Image (cartoon, rainbow, N blue to C red; front, side):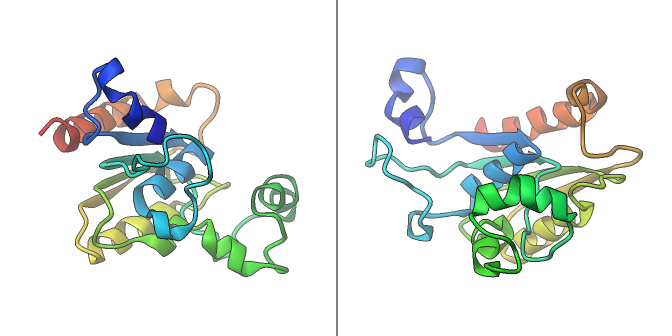
Length: 178
């Protein structure tokens, strides 16, 4: 985000109108971009430190928003979450809280649109529902769309979720083309 803002003029981007979108782990990261602030400790030491990492709208497709409730199988934790977080949930629940976007929701969060498959066995649809509810409670426009008959996504998820992608484009048009 900081690089994008620093180079906005070159690429004819309005640095005050940037959205984040992603599926699965990318959805989790898009959510973190939307809700975290510099004080939360995610800025790192990369380039363009004078630029903001904030985004003005977020769309997540079946991204995990809450790591504080252990709703995953042990294999997933061992293969994915331990390398990401640095420890098991049982050993360091504080680290799992730190990577949970739902923990950072505030009145300053941007609008969110969260899509989730009703049959998702990897990330519970409740993650998106709870995130939208928490955002709305903070006074932020947010909506969770639960898609019947869909799971977590697959290689052809964009085609299967085409109507949702259209809604995401309309959402960004509404919130970023003011």
